[in-house]
Length: 263
Image 1: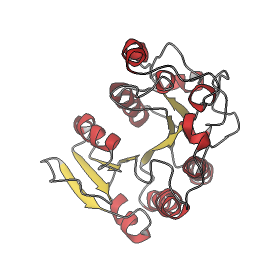
Image 2 (image 1 turned 90 degrees about the horizontal axis):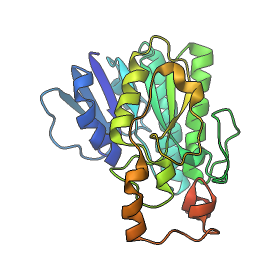
Image 3 (image 1 turned 135 degrees about the vertical axis):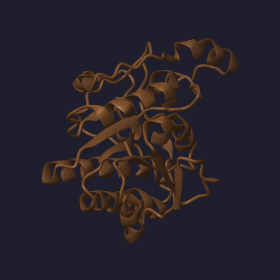
């Protein structure tokens, strides 16, 4: 493609995708509210507050596709979540509607369903059970994607990312981990499949223990290749398995289910 927009490019996952997706477009337009460093030869750097409607409209103009990683990525107080994750998502979809409906990948989260127990196998059509304000904001984003698809034909891949780190950080993440390579492959499929629609996709690798059924997204042709099991011995040596009554062992959202509402 000609120009791919990556929002949230200064974040941990954004920095990884900046490298991984460079071959996917002639130009990467990178955006964040924070510093992103110097632009490389095939990059455009645009500092942007997602809550600024005019700035987001300008940001989206001329883009063929959007990887939307931007916004608050952890549990916070309501005001920053409201600006970046709610108002910002509205601004993004209005900008996409005004500029030719570039295909969007929306980085949703497992925290939209965090209060399900770990012994439950979930399909994308099961009711949301968010575990915090951050999770609620991602539910809002999924609803916006659905609205704009049904009303305007705006295609979006809603990817409920589990835990996309170099390696799982705790035993819970053995079930939620997705490698950067698998995420990159999924992005490629979502941007190139002839008809995308507005699917909810579980962002998880081919782990031995999984809580999520991705069969509804098989039409994309995506098959994750990595497996978190190679990290189990390392985690066992580093830390004890949480008690069976601990939130990390009970709920799919882990400790987020116990976090207070921040002021």
